[in-house]
Image 1 (cartoon, helix red, strand yellow):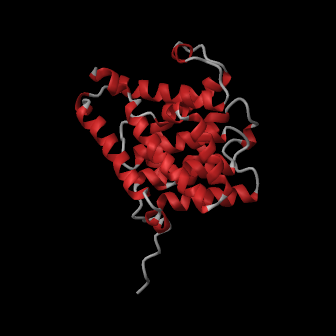
Image 2 (cartoon, helix red, strand yellow):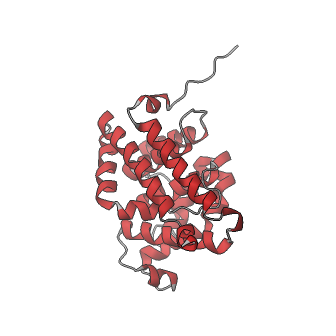
Length: 245
């Protein structure tokens, strides 16, 4: 009888403060979604959350457009890329569950449309990038005791730092994080706004991504603790908070 495969994220659960930080962040998300009116949530609230996320992700990618400009359809090219990506994001929920490599490729194809040659859309830059993407796809479908928030955070960090695509890697990374939160049942209606949290915590976000990219144990540890903090802030950035006031 074959033994069950080892948990690829077992190491994460041994890091000091990490399991409790993610548990606390998940509790905060659950409170906002439950207590701020999830049962009466409208599609417009999801659309507003996605729009806020697109704007924040675009700014992190270099856009100079304001949220009102993006809402009015008057954002710059980077903002337009982010909005186009967000518009199709939730349709990829079943794809990322069953064929995560295809979902990641589609994220880049959406983001890079019009600015990347058609033969490079959704394709890894080189053999090393292809290996990275395959490893991430395996991680997404692996059986693990690690919380869904942690899986989303790791996929985000690996995409952002390994930069496997020809462009828009940060934008794709943040979209993949939000997509996994929805697909894994943390936030099925995509009402929290992790991109806005990363923008509000930009210095920490960028510093901790560099730490993750270093490959050190300390860098990994710091990114995961930061991510738990950002997920808590993402819940506070939800449009549900404004509706409840």
